[in-house]
Length: 51
Image (cartoon, rainbow, N blue to C red):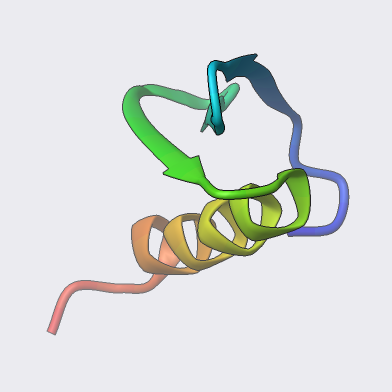
């Protein structure tokens, strides 16, 4: 995910965010670090070629 931009914010207990290139794919995490891990997984998933 290096070099990939993302937008995030805290909403109550959770951190929400999306990749700037894919704003329709919102994800959340229990902490900012957890959110970043989910965003990295999402980035890999969206960029991998379809089977």
